[in-house]
Amino acid sequence: MKKALDYIWPVVGLLAVAFSFWLLARELRAISAEDVLESMARIGPWQLVLAALSTVAGYGMLAWYDRIALLHLGVKHISWTFITLASFTTYALSHNIGASVLSGAMVRYRAYTSQGLSPSQIAVLVGICSFTFVLGVVVLTGLVLVFEPYVLARLADLLPAGLQIEPVAQGIGSALLLLVALYLLGSLLGLPPLRIRAFRLDYPRPAVTARQLAASTLDLLFTAAIVYFLLPWDANPGYFVVLAVFLASFSAALISHAPGGLGVFELVFITAMPDIPDAELIAALVLFRVYYLLVPFAFSLVVVAVFERRKLAEALRTRAKRLGRKGQGRESG
Image (tube, rainbow, N blue to C red; front, side, top):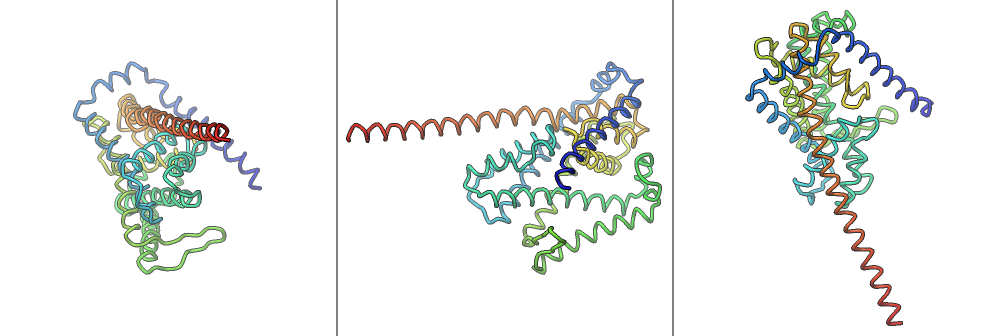
């Protein structure tokens, strides 16, 4: 069954991406590239600067994910600089290539084995980082549903009708926040691991869970702010509306397994924000991809190239020394 799912889920993902592209093309058929470029030109310099600062802050929070996981493991000898570069490279590559193709485990394994971590430690690190991100999504989604349930009306074409009823949305939001509260309570009380069949959740120390909550929520708040600052100011629906739509679009993009959520991310935004002219909305989303995906991707390739070149040079030096010792041994013999 597992082998069958290994083939089924990629096919489902590809079909979802193809369907999203078809819907997106239908939505954008009346927009020309010139309209989008003109909309980009109207984005003010201060908007671009604030979007850039939000990007840096967002990636800074992602580096904190790794630091938190290492704190949970009790690893203290790795510098902040190395952690930041490893985390930045991991997320820049996986965001663009797709988590199903290149997971954080592969990049982190290469980086952290060079710092003496074992495969089991790296597996825990990846798990903690993934759970930290999910924690932030659950917290912010719960808060949005409880305090801003009307936002779901913007997603009427994408969600079941029942979710558009405000008391239902608030109930779901309350349940999500309750799950987070139980997780925090389990950490505070030092409860034994939670087991559900093969799933096991070890409660980290309170100092770790507090950092998880802070890092994950700030990460998503900063990342949503990139789109918020790039939208036209006169038609901007407000930060919390942008945050709600961002959470929905980002989650849909991750579920689709499309590289960078291409097509899926844009479709949710266009569907949820009919009050913003399509050309201006697409201009903001294109620049979001430039800031959050393409520029970090380019820098990450440089980081990988420098890292691998250094490791190759070290391997060649070690080999040369070994061959030199063998040659000396033959001469002395």
